[in-house]
Length: 397
Ligand code: ADP
Image (cartoon, helix red, strand yellow):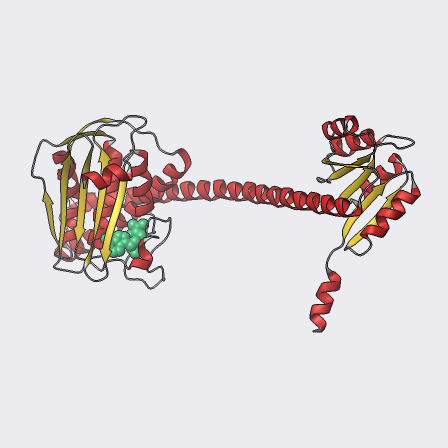
């Protein structure tokens, strides 16, 4: 009970400055507003109004158009050009409407009220102006916060790219030496030495893949990536993907099945990007599948529209509640330190960004413990305006 009372009494009062040489007017306004939560300050001329503004910084000003020293317009202009002051709503009061009305609004007043003033009108105009002030200060706070976040984002991004480059160079040297040792250039290794060197090579490659993924992700975030389009043969893409992913699958005895019914399927797109997209998805299918299962990779030519790549696994699947998050950066179903699957949670975010850059779509269906199916749709021909609409998808699939 006491706490409530205390917090009520602490509620900050709104500072209202009344500038009028007529003390009766000031007294009347103070009287009308007396019951409201205002701290009322008075000024009988323009110069003292400006002094009050500099020290007490009112939340709102009621300003008489006619003042003995500086007139209302001059006071208005001086407040508006003072960069040290926040936005203070000014309501100009005058009996010379409508000419004075227009001049006052042009010179920086926000609202106008005709004298003699009606108390109810005055109260509602003040409230409206305070709402406006609050909205403006909230949006300027937001833009400040936004700016701070953007600066932090640049620092984060620079950090990622510096650390990744620093890690990549020595790692490549380690992999190079492992290669030399395995190749027998420095003498034949015995069996245990070969096994250990192979393990160094495997772990190094895994780490290099992660670093490359992080660099790719950072690049796409920063530059949006530049695309380079050429005619691609799907058979060549499949050969590359099979070559890279089969060794990973073999470790878990997963049967990789690349099905290409028509060897002549072609599309005009960015080779590097298409390969990265599919590689990320297929690597996930292998990673999130148990031993002795199957991964099926197939392709369908939707005539002149797009090419549909389908990646089906029999893995752990994704629950309905999680499926909407999987394309978010750094999101993983299991993000605990003790999780059984490696990765940074950026593979799908990167894949989605690249698919969108190519004007395509990425779709997923999944059932826990049954498996997942990812569909990647890439336009057959890239035009600046090309992007697959959901309607054309529904018609085509
Ligand atoms: P990462 O694989 O590095 O964790 P991704 O961005 O590639 O990150 O994937 C995000 C998350 O989506 C994964 O951590 C996993 O929880 C889930 N996921 C992605 N692909 C599959 C899949 N084929 N089967 C089951 N879960 C998946």
